[in-house]
Length: 181
Image (cartoon, rainbow, N blue to C red; front, side):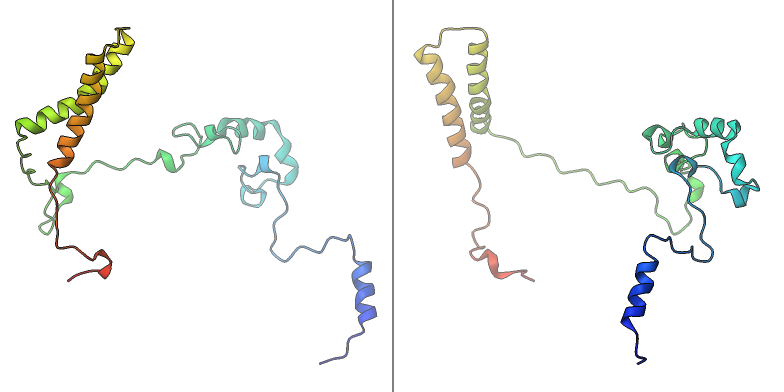
């Protein structure tokens, strides 16, 4: 290692304080945010002085203000954006011999028929609170038999549905043993 003179290096740092370092080779000059949507002066063949002409301001307003949601809305900007893309419609000619075509799911199995007890239990579970709500909204007198019918119907229907639930798989005593193959 070469011996360095720390005092000389420190004096160099202090002397360069506040001075802007030179741009690296190939760097482009700074442009304000309003001018970012405009083409580069090197590419368009114009110099920096022509950027303040009124025709540039008209071109900038045709695109909309940079950074606003309006300039990126579909069909609004002067140049098409990602939301302006539309996929072409699929046709039967797109498929070859290897393609099977559009997937059509099989017909689902029919729902099991509910018995009379389950239907009355669901009627009580839903009908009890609805009857209670209707009686409050219409201003009916809350008599003992109306309250018993609403609350008792809900509780009885709920208890009936819980009691009639299928127990499921009783063989799964230890759920923490991981995947079973």
